[in-house]
Image (cartoon, rainbow, N blue to C red; front, side, top):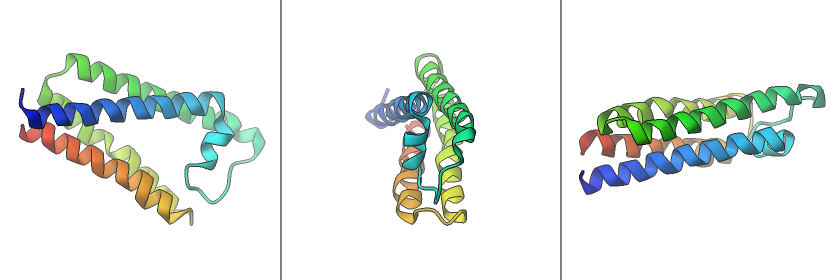
Amino acid sequence: MTVTQLVGILIAGFSGLAIAAIGAIYLVAPRRAASGFGLPSLPQESATPWLQLKGLRDLATGVVAGVLLVTAPVPTLGWALLAFTLIPAGDALVVLRSGGRRGMAWGVHGGTASLMTVGAVLLLAG
């Protein structure tokens, strides 16, 4: 394994842990978690279960990333990480299109997608 691949694996691991943690937060404190997403408003209180569904999906995404880290060959991990970048890139687009906070869209969601892309490239190039 090369240093390049090791850095890619660290980025993949960090990304998986981060999204699993975000998912857990959405499960226990969905409205508080949603307030930091960057959208211009929160859904009505009665829609809180939808936020918990997001939490379950984020948690599952993090678990899948962890399983891939442990079981998949490096190139497979790289392609999976690249595919996972669709999530934060899509989040950024949704925030921007809804008139949400541009700083969150570009800085958090866009930054996450960029970091994950770098990790994927390192895994695939190594």
